[in-house]
Amino acid sequence: MASRADTGLGRTTWLLLALAALWGAALVVAALTVPSGTVTVVTTAGPSHAFVAHRSDPTLVAENGIKVLALVAVPLVAVLGVGGSLALRRRRGRPGAGPVAWALTTVVGAICLVGLLTIGIFVIPVAALLVVCCARSAPDHLTEEDRARLGPAGPPPYRPSASGPLSPP
Image (cartoon, rainbow, N blue to C red):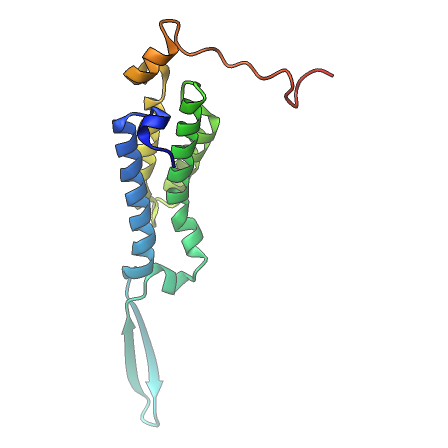
């Protein structure tokens, strides 16, 4: 990813994106290493039918399979996508977060709601940080460098190119 000076996102936005990425990475590590609960299996053994109890503390991945990592990694991937989208829009001189960043943020928010009783509560900090990053990309939160580059008129309005796929024949 380009440096902060190249993208004009500002120190605070980069810090918030870094915190969200660290939290997202911690979720992946936790799914691999932290016990998600206790499983006790009771069986009978031998002719006396004695009960044998076996207790284990499996991780989220050990209990649900490797496929669960795809769900747990979504917040981290979304943070990278939002950061890239914000940087690209700022580099092109477009204000605001744009539809890609907001869509990725909405996906993370949906994971929070759907999984609220399981892992969703642990994803809430990532969703909150992404909302703040997208909101900070509004024209009233432009950095001083952006304001100087864009001038007093502010950012130019978005106009699709004439050679785009939706242009008249």
